[in-house]
Image 1 (cartoon, one colour):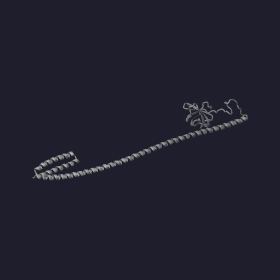
Image 2: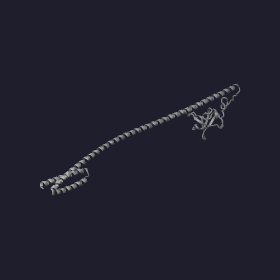
Image 3: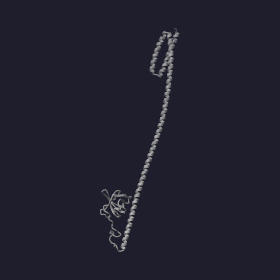
Image 4: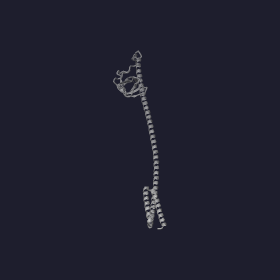
Amino acid sequence: MTAFGKILVFMNLLFSVVTGFLIIMVFDKRTDWKTKYDKMERRAEAAELSYKAEKMSHDNDLKQKDSSSSSLVVEVASLKDRLSSSQADSEANLKKAQEQEKLASTYLVDSQKIQAEMAQVREERQRLIDEKQAQRVALVKVQQEVDDQRVKYVNADLMAKALQSKNTNLLRQLEELTVKLRDVEQGNTVLVGGSSNSNSVLNPPPKAAPPGVRGRVTAVGREGTFLAQINVGSDSGVTSGNVLTVFRGDTYVGDLTITGTEPKIAVGKFVPAKRTLAIQVDDSVITSFSSVSQ
């Protein structure tokens, strides 16, 4: 073998080693560098052994050069295919990442919408609660006004009954006085003089109340009138001018002077035993033990 042939073989071998090294470096950048480095080192050793073998035989070197060139071309093509596959995978992963980002943005917008709707629902709920509270306050106010009107109606009714009974009593007394005056004029009655507190035609004696009559207070007039209604009347023998004792449990509350009666009820004016005491509904009443009005 000539020196030029040996140089050519050496150059081809050197080119093969450099090309293999570059291919191994490209492959090492995309795979495990340590494994490729070991392969490169083994190939370098193989190339060195091949280089030594080439020196021994030119024909074997040519065959080995052709075989190495073919295998390197195949390996380069394989690496290109792997590179293309890796690029395709990278693009697919990038598209997936973009889709995930879009989905995350959509979820964020939906979450903000839901939070806004929840805030609106909370505001509407609070507004309904406020309206309900306002309606409840208005209802309480209306109920209080109704109660006040009912109390006024009861007081007016009591006063009307008291005035009616008083008028009836006055008319009856007027009739009695008229009859007595007529008797005096005819000489059938003699007026008895005396002090202003003695009994006479103009100052008749009080009527006795039947003993042992019991009842209870069913209604009380407005504050300051001292009027009250009881559930016993003329059917029980109670008449105008009778004085009934008012008590609550074992406590003496005061006296009730009857000013008007009906068959089942009577109306009177209350005189408290103490300034701090007041007559109340369901208080008990009884005719005085003396059965004579005070």
